[in-house]
Image (cartoon, rainbow, N blue to C red):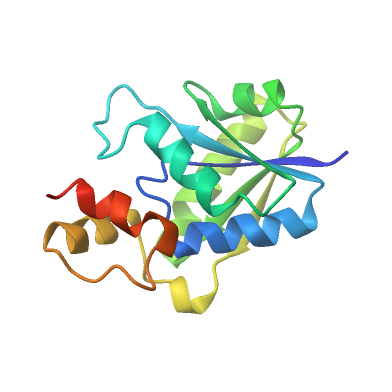
Length: 158
């Protein structure tokens, strides 16, 4: 079985993230969405809330699992028996950063491959930061995040 890990903060998950998850789920037998819990950052949503939102929007994808992790991505991937790390790319700037991370992960464990997937161009400008800023000004989130989680995001700004 070919298992891939798709890591990120997903604070919150966007339509661009969901695009990558759906496409990766067609390529790999199993995709584990790894929600990074970073103690040095203060996300808008708790790790548990982020996991819940991702589970809601991927419920129709039988081969997608969602879990949290702390520490090194390669350790999380190993714990999930994954051999591939999937990274979504929107821009050249994303590539530069993710390329460095891929080389670091390869140095830490040469068995892991990183596969880059370009997000659909209609989502290439969407980021979690942009979604949070838009939500903070009570803007319409339709088209930026899955419909199932719009109310959850709005509640954070009431």
